[in-house]
Length: 226
Ligand SMILES: Cc1cc2nc3c(=O)[nH]c(=O)nc-3n(C[C@H](O)[C@H](O)[C@H](O)COP(=O)(O)OP(=O)(O)OC[C@H]3O[C@@H](n4cnc5c(N)ncnc54)[C@H](O)[C@@H]3O)c2cc1C
Image (cartoon, rainbow, N blue to C red; front, side, top):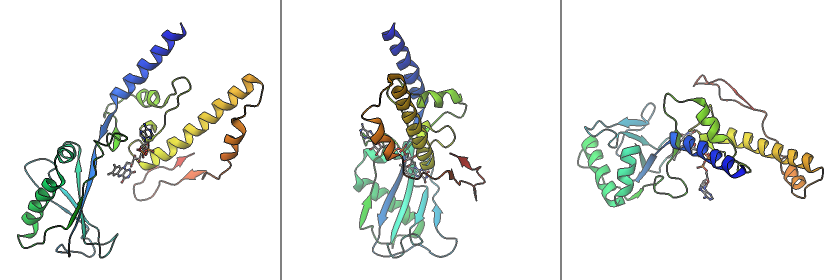
C-alpha cells in the first residue's frame, strides 16, 4: 500500500513537470576595439528585422552600464538560442557581424571577443526560466511545488505569482525554507524529543529576512507580502 502511494505521488509530480516548458534566453556579448553605434539619451537599444523570426533582433549597447567597455549585447530566445548553441562561436560571430554590417555599413571593425552562454546545453540548467502554458491550471504550479515525501521543491518555477523571475526564486526559497522548518518542528513534536539537527538549523534562521518585498513602481505590480 505504501509503495502504491509513493508511485502515485511520483505520477502527479511527473505530470506537473511535463506540463511546464522551459524557455531559453541567451545574451551574446560582443566586444569591439571602439564604438561605432550611437550613444546618449534614448539610444540604448536597437532592433533588427529579418525574415527569420528572432534572428539577432534585439541589440543593446552597454555604454550606460559599463562606460568605455565597447560591448554590444544581442538577445536571442528559444529556437534561435538552441540553433546558436549548437554551432561554433566563430559561426555566431560571423552571423552577428553580417547583421551589424547590414545595419551600420561595411566599414565597422570586427569584434575582438565574443561570449556565447549555453543555458540549454548546461546540464545543471537546461534552459533559462520556466514557462507555463497560457491556459494553465494553478494546480500545476502547486503540484510542482508540493513535496514528495521528505523531498522538497523550490525555485522560480514553484512561484505561483512570479515564476520565470529572480524575485519568484527568492520568494519561493523563503516559502520552502519555512515549510521545511515547520516539517522538522512537526517531526520533533511527534517524536517528543529534540533532534540533534533541528536546533542548529533554527539558529541559522535567526538572520533578518525583510518582512515585505516592494515590487510596486513602474510596472504597477502589487506588493508581494511575505
Ligand atoms: C540570460 C538570462 C536572463 C534573465 N533575465 C532575467 C531578468 O531580467 N529578470 C528576472 O527576474 N529573471 C531573469 N532571468 C531568470 C532568472 O535568472 C531565474 O528565474 C532565476 O535565476 C531562478 O532562480 P532559481 O534559484 O530558481 O534557479 P537557479 O538560479 O537556476 O539556481 C539553481 C541552481 O541549482 C544548481 N543545480 C542544478 N542541478 C543541480 C544538481 N543536480 N546538483 C547541484 N546543483 C544543481 C544550478 O547550477 C543552479 O546554480 C534570466 C535568466 C537568464 C538565463
